[in-house]
Picture 1 (cartoon, rainbow, N blue to C red):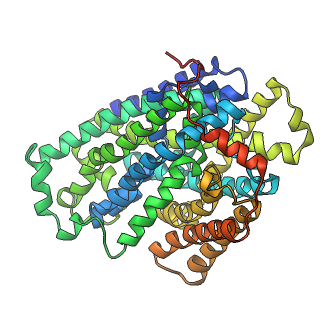
Picture 2 (spheres, rainbow, N blue to C red):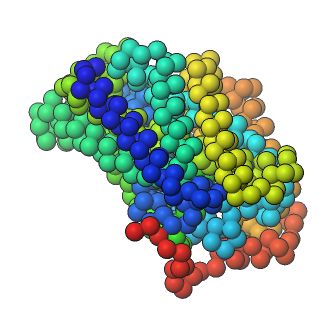
Picture 3 (cartoon, helix red, strand yellow):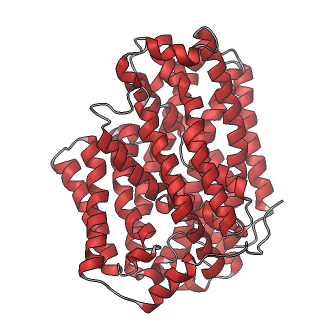
Length: 498
């Protein structure tokens, strides 16, 4: 890369650190650190929700699928999320917000101790946290792959540099830093994506390339489904993403919780849903065109990086690289904040009696330490990603498949229709889904569709079935579900940041 490109990347990193330091002054307690004190404007919550939902995996693993299979990656990778978040704006966004405003909840799993019991809460907390270690490690490795293509930098150093910058601003500034850097990153990646789109259209002969491109690609590249990415997989992904992106990925529940009231939470969710349906098409158009512009590339996962280096002038390469960084750093920082919330609010008080009576200062210090240690752990695991199934293997086969068993009792436990599903249904559905995954993935070596579908369908069947056949009525549970489901005639009075 040219010195101008390095200058652009360094300026981006410096901006993230400045935002983190500014956010530090807005943090006075654990609630501020984890839920922004319930003062995040709806538009910032929506953009932060969107930016926290995908990473540099888009420019590596998904770019590879776009190169070989075409538009199918948009439908199961992003349209499914847009639909799922749209459903969540109706079912879950307001309920997450009421958990904070009515019950004082600061962690996505904090309410589970009352909804089910402490063992259920701990089972979901430990398994979900372990899964997130590998998920985030895959994101670090994806960024390191791009840095390796752009600069020749060793993978380890790519992981260390991006991880360290994220670690600093996330540990210092909490959720405020996450959300504000998400907004800055959204602007940067928007400019970078438009620049890349403009250059690719120029190579295709102008604006007409938007519609003439498709006739030059193989017919299979225009199909929403393929023999590998089937209709069943697409439908299962809608179910998985509905649960995952409305709280199953704990960091996204925090965006709903951080809004000042339920109306703002719902508006933020709808903004995020719209962005998931529309914006990926802008970013992915160059990926769809890659087979025509750089045919015969050996490693399809490097296609986007190769196009950037081939077609963009000095300075703009650094801008695009900064835009790619923005996705991963947004997701990882928000994930780290959510995991820290779970460790501080849910896991430590069970393991360590003193943690139950922490002062404000001690609680905030613990939150920062747990965030720091979690990010360092993911960076260490990232160096081992090639031995664990590479990026797409981790993100799709592990995370997508295992998120369902964790999400089912977490999300459905909020809804009145499942009020009779108690701790037995929650634990059995969680364990059954994990066992089903182990059987189909390691025992039967099943297809990707079967691997992703089986765990969540087994968990759903067990959760619903036990609720019907062996109900566990509980007056406290009924009262809580009624409280978080109660409609509000007017917004709460918690002031948002102007």
